[in-house]
Image (cartoon, rainbow, N blue to C red; front, side, top):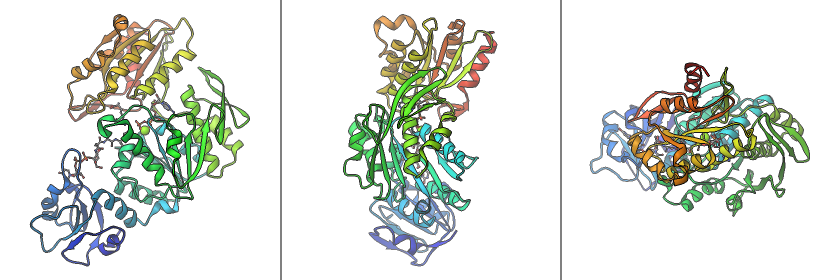
Length: 489
Ligand SMILES: CC(=O)N[C@H]1[C@@H](OP(=O)(O)OP(=O)(O)OC[C@H]2O[C@@H](n3ccc(=O)[nH]c3=O)[C@H](O)[C@@H]2O)O[C@H](CO)[C@@H](O)[C@@H]1O[C@H](C)C(=O)N[C@@H](C)C(=O)N[C@H](CCC(=O)O)C(=O)O
Ligand SMILES: Nc1ncnc2c1ncn2[C@@H]1O[C@H](COP(=O)(O)OP(=O)(O)OP(=O)(O)O)[C@@H](O)[C@H]1O
Ligand SMILES: N[C@H](CCC[C@H](N)C(=O)O)C(=O)O
Ligand SMILES: [Mg+2]
């Protein structure tokens, strides 16, 4: 792929330009370590470091051009420098142009919200595959082109990777793409310049306050996605969420809502939430689904609403949707062979998700079943979640084992100390703290009697534990199965 630099600079505000005017660009990068001859290097102001300091390195590696906010004191005469007001924004706009605006030729649907993005995106992808379409998926668990799996490193990729993936999807004949839009991606301009056919809002609760500073900023980031939807797009929001209505304020897209309380465009009514699945009435039709939990009733309504807004036939959508399972690591059961202990692996890593999952278990359990919860909180992430999640685990379970979940560059025992602060005095007796996650799961399984429930929360589909930047193999599902076996359960 080749484009002239001048074709790319037409889509951004250029404050100043130095060096050769006519340059051929054969690739884009935001990382000097990937920069080489023919590439256009974007110097981004990061949170850990400043990409501008790597400009000399990129020049030494022979890049064709540089986009930056500040020009270096010394300019290399053979390199073109383009000064812009915002490198991240320019990168997104230029990446969309470089890859030929694939989003304009696809039905691109973005999903934002604190919880439920992966569930909705993955199930929409499965649904549209079953309906006979070629389609793409961009999600926390993995990216997909039809059934081809492309590993993902972020919930929402950076703007270059994003446009590159969309272009690949378009090239192989995809018509629809379902993607998660994280709050980080909105603030960092990863989705700027994309053309969406629709946006979905799931809910907004506590997460990522370390990054956004305040809840209001977090809301603004999510709202920023709805604000960029074009007039032709649908803006589908959860009418039952406190922030659902805010998301629709002043949007250009068509305003649509879903609700379990009877006041949405798409209406659901909960008939039964049982261990074998949800029984719902959706727009007057009774349907049995395989997913469990009231929170999943919301996800199912959002998926159904989006599919109908994309032009699909409601009855057909419900028929297919009723047979689908959720995304990997979302309320995934694994039953021990002898003692029939139900292990549940779930990606609940926010207070709201943990509360919902524990409430769901409370709704479907038999009185004789004890609930034992294993949970930790990630390092280098929002610290304010820690005491709240420990409190919820202690209050809503019969026993809780607090443990580690990707400590990253933090001391795991310090994270655990912050969690313990949240455990109410009267619940201290039922809470254990075991730093090693494998030992914690083993202890929970050892504590479980026949028929009991062991919830292992926080990591879901993840297959690693990140300690000091080193990711070692760790899979909650696998560890649970191993412990069932080891302990003869
Ligand atoms: C906090 C955050 O979002 N950070 C993202 C951000 O990195 P950063 O701002 O820290 O970058 P930096 O390390 O300061 O570097 C600044 C610039 O210098 C460049 N650089 C750096 C070193 C070098 O030798 N040469 C060089 O050119 C870097 O490539 C970068 O362009 O930009 C990078 C490039 O796009 C991302 O990879 C990185 O994601 C980090 C790894 C991350 O963990 N992000 C998480 C928090 C995240 O984005 N999560 C969301 C939401 C999760 C969810 O709830 O689902 C997601 O969408 O995944
Ligand atoms: N609609 C919902 N409301 C509240 N909690 C939910 C909802 N859907 C899923 N959850 C809970 O949140 C967890 C994460 O769900 P999911 O992966 O779909 O969310 P996400 O928004 O993609 O998360 P992330 O921000 O990590 O990408 C699930 O394992 C479940 O515990
Ligand atoms: N997308 C979320 C995932 C958190 C998952 C949890 N296992 C952790 O590592 O904190 C984040 O990056 O904050
Ligand atoms: Mg996700």
